[in-house]
Length: 555
Ligand code: GLC
Ligand code: CA
Figure 1: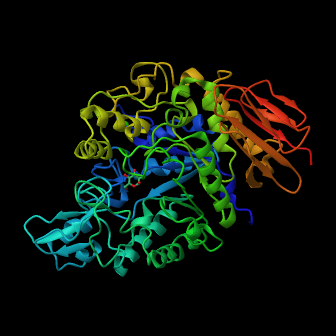
Figure 2: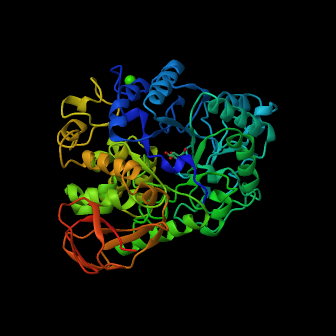
Figure 3: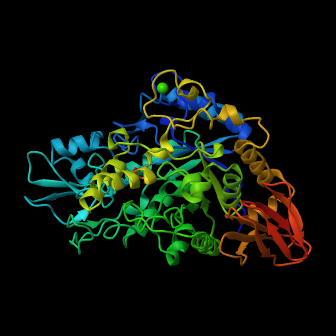
């Protein structure tokens, strides 16, 4: 694969509502991000992905856009964003914005006009069906039917996500053109690219046929009826052609459920995007992405297999985006390490495991501190619409209230959205006023102030690890090298990163006990890891509990 500039980035994801409040209203904002640029520069990240800051009624915290060309007042003014872009650039940090174009808010002017006047051209910007009965039995991602009745008319509108997030009708050429103009306008503002939200849903099955129900509610999840639906290629190709191709930018798509044998179309040489997130191992604890109550047990061996299957597929066709956390996922320490979530060695091991995979690494705010999930005692304490829906849905499916609360605690998107703990003082230095969402209980202990500059802290480990990938003596291999799995026992994940010149074997012990592994070759040299001591003897390595180690192989 020809080298691309974005392969060298380390991308840090910011959930603006929870990063830093600059004006004491309890809500994080753009100026708060600008204030903390030195912290990010010091960590070593090279690009920020900022979750939506556009004008929005915040029903889904900004993933419901009511004006694509204006900012939400609680986040700031356009000048604040310009300042952020400028100040970031001064520190050689690029800015990636979030692009939410599968749906808008029901408070978007287009939707308001569509409702006011069914004859207006905006009516066809959305998906409406006339009739007195619900058009089919598809279930939305945030619960209930995908159809919502239009008040006062025998008509329904379609929403893949929440009721206040009506889907845009991509079949309408004028709408597509408006979206492309908007995308080009943003790219002209000096941003480096886009993370593209929920893009797999833009093409619907136009037969609108009902299907076999998959729940006691008689509905069927819309991921089965209108995700990556044939015909989507035409829209995605056109989107790329009319926008991204005209700029030097990077795109990473949230394109869940793309079959591996279709990956070429998405990320290949002529692909729609530069990279996509693969959720197959992020969601290994649930039977299907957005149904939290269908929990399944998993093992490190399965995690290993899923990661390697993903890596080998992505390598075959192009490049990928590696992540263990985001604003929709639980904290990685809690999800993947379970009882070991408070063990810094384990947290560092996990970090190195995903960070040296082949692809561009993404770090979600707070991940670099080893933040953990919370436990809430009542459904009233949640903000996330998805948590509330999954709570009631699982009760409907037969779970008790206690069981429902348990699974919501494990999976709630609020876990990742708690305000960033800058220090151990009141409200964690996030704000002077009560934050919009409760902090984690651990913040007096797990916070930036307690870790920055502290030898051995998780933050300092991330800093060192980023520097090692970006500018260490083996950067070419660690960034551009090929990957292949190395066979191991059940609790150890291992892979080789290699070029024609060198080969580095990376091993990660997920067990709290020692493990002995056989290296692919003899007399390797330990390069880097999370623990001081590495015990290699010939082709045998004895890994300490939760040890991560990179070994240069003799060629
Ligand atoms: C994506 C976002 C999520 C949002 C949804 C609807 O999955 O990551 O936060 O709720 O799309 O826009
Ligand atoms: Ca604020």
